[in-house]
Structure formats: C-alpha cells, structure tokens
Length: 252
Image (cartoon, rainbow, N blue to C red; front, top):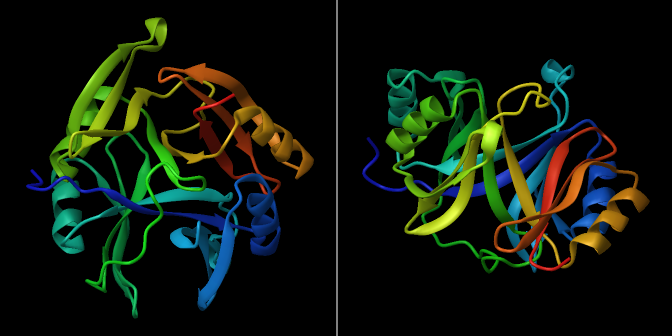
C-alpha cells in the first residue's frame, strides 16, 4: 500500500486536431497556450501550466480523442509492479521523456486507465491557485465495479474515503480525499457510459455562460447543466473532435 497520498498533477488531451482544440478550449475554458515543448502544447491557467494538448500518434489514429489524468508517483516502475499485483494492467510500460520525466499508462481491474508519472525536475514549478478558472476542480471515476476500483486505488495511491452519497438505484457515490481534502469521486458507471473511464471537470465562472460558449464554439452538450452538492453546477459535453469533457462552477 502506498505510504503517501499520490495526487493528480497534470491532465492532457490527445486529439486529432491540435489547432482546432486550442481554438475551442481557449474560447470555452479560457486557457492560453505555450509551445515550450516540441509537439506538445502546454495549457496555461492564469499563466501557470495545468495540462497539455498533443496530436494522436499515427499508430493510435483509430483511438478517439481523450482527456487523461496523470498521478504522481515517486517510483513509476514500483507502482507498475504494485498495480499488477493489485489486479490492474499495464497498457504502456514505463518510458522516459527527456527533460520531462518517467511515466507509464496503467489500468484498474475494472477497465479504466490513467497515467502515472515522476517528473524529472525536483524544482517547484509554478502552479495555478486551487479553484482558479482553468484548473481541474474534480476527478471522477466511472468504474466497472465501485468496490473493486476503490480497493485498487486506495491501496495503490493511498487515497482515503470522504463522504459516501447514496444515489438510489445508481448505487453510491464515493468521495476520495488527498491530505484531507475532497479531490474527486467514484461511482459505478451508468449503462449509457460505454466503458469504465475517468472524467475531469474544469473550473469556469458561471455554468450558463459556459454552456453558451460550448455551443457557439461547435461543441455539443451531453448532459446538464445540473446542480450537484456544494452547491455547484456542472455540464458534460464533447468538443468538435469528439473528446468528452466536463465543466464545473460555483455559480449558475
């Protein structure tokens, strides 16, 4: 079991059209962009990096555009071994990106996947203020089996339980915490969700205005807007290339 609580440290989009994605998310979320890395666009929230956009590699061109979260680990190889021991899978074995870090793609026993990463630099990079527009406000797992997924992630990353919210026939919604703070939730995926997956919610100011920006920029609303405990308001949508994403705001 992890002796630390491994946090999400990055989120990025792999897409079929980087320039179109930049135009869309710049208009909808308000990110600005930096091309400090070859073939990779860094997303900036209030001038600080929070994620990135990259083109889908040719060998993966049949894969639909997708957002992915990165979880920090001090030892990528050891975490891969532990993931397998806990019933997970390695979708891509550990590799190094020069001047960036070491990473791997892992999957939980119920079928969802994410990245694990150890950044190469030990220097504290500038990070956006928590809750700021353009940052990730929530990390949500739609699992094949909630109990199996919780056992896997809590043991692998040291995450602890927050509140458990009953959702009737949909089962429980389990909040998880890092350093005593709610950072996400887990639930059994609904039948309309094609496969188990992680979903990420980007902070915006005002959900109704954000919905209008989505449709104006060529995106499609998939669900919502709706009020959730907090109170907060969320909306789920797809961008023009087909990537699924979510927005969250503390105001309607």
